[in-house]
Length: 228
Ligand SMILES: C[S@@+](CC[C@H](N)C(=O)[O-])C[C@H]1O[C@@H](n2cnc3c(N)ncnc32)[C@H](O)[C@@H]1O
Image (cartoon, rainbow, N blue to C red; front, side):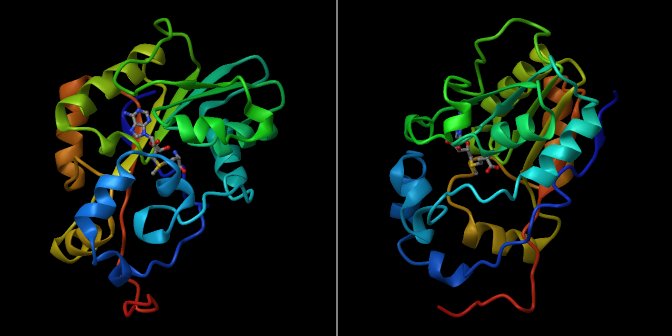
């Protein structure tokens, strides 16, 4: 597989966001969100997800991931930044017999994981994944790597490449123009590294990453509720 842009989240539902509500108290909310604790997952929308609950929305994405990588029973795959393990659970549903695992830095998320994934989620950081070289048929990381400083992003990408050479998929925050940058900066809480797709491609190259990638871009939607 060669490095290329592929959208594996095409079937993820679009969320409506009240951007203005996140403008107040931003620095304090960012500090709290970056702890990736209860407030981030199950606190208010100003400090994170505003309630991170399983609702099956990842199942179509899991099906697309299984198809994209040709995963089958007995294969091993890893989700870096797995949160409570929603995608890990749905990958095992989409591909019975798949050995799916996750890694996340949040003890809170792991302590509140889905029952089906108990024992499959590891506490750790994307920059140092505690698994042997070439030990997974696919490694994915969705909306996680941008939470690291630039040099740590390089380390995390090298780790994904080490575990599954050419069989990675990462999705990270990006913007293509000034209007998208503005809306991104108003909304985001936890990103430490961000930029345009070409900035990310430079980071992928520096890391020697040869997997696939796509961007999470907040677009301006005329239906968005912009008022508080
Ligand atoms: C925006 S959430 C994405 C969760 C899930 N992948 C999804 O798309 O719903 C970011 C996740 O990255 C985790 N995270 C942040 N820094 C991390 C790190 N250095 N290593 C591993 N996970 C990290 C957070 O705890 C959180 O679960």
